[in-house]
Image (tube, rainbow, N blue to C red; front, side):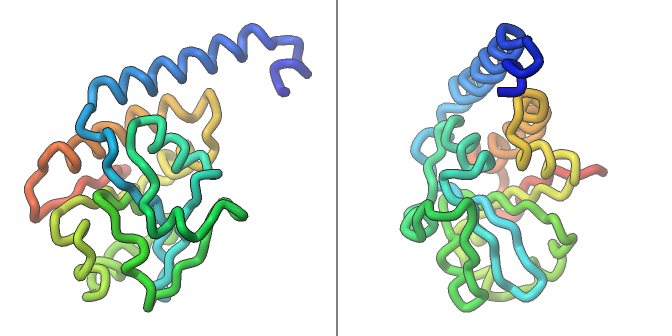
Length: 176
C-alpha cells in the first residue's frame, strides 16, 4: 500500500521479491530447520511469557525458514498476535527450539529460574536469545527493509543451535 501511495509499486514489489529470495535461500541452506518446532517468546520479569502466534511476522519468518509453530502455542489460537502464558504454564513454550526476544533485559533472571531449566529445549541447548534491540526491532517490524537485517542476524544463530551446537550452550544474538 505504501508503494502504491508513493507511486513506487514496482520498486516495492522488487524489494519484496528480494526478501522472499533471501528467505528461500536461507531455508534451502539450512535443511535442518525443516519441520522443527519453534516458540518465539518475550520473557517477562514475573516469569510469564508473551508467545507470538502464527499471525505475527516473527513467527511467519520462522515458518518461512521451514520451522513450524509449536503445537502448544498453536493450540492457543490465532485470534491475537500473541498470547500470555503464565509462569505456571511455562511448559507451554517448550519446542524443538525456543527463540527468546529479551525486550526487557531479563535474560539473567530467566536463566536463574529452575522452571525454565526444566524445558527440554533448554536442557538440549536449543535456545536462541535475541538481546540486540536492533534485531528485536527488525524481527518485529517484518518489513522489506528490516527483514534482511533480521535474517542476517537470526539465521546463523538458528543454524548454530539447530545444527548441533554444544548441549551446554545457547546462541545469543547481541550487541556485543
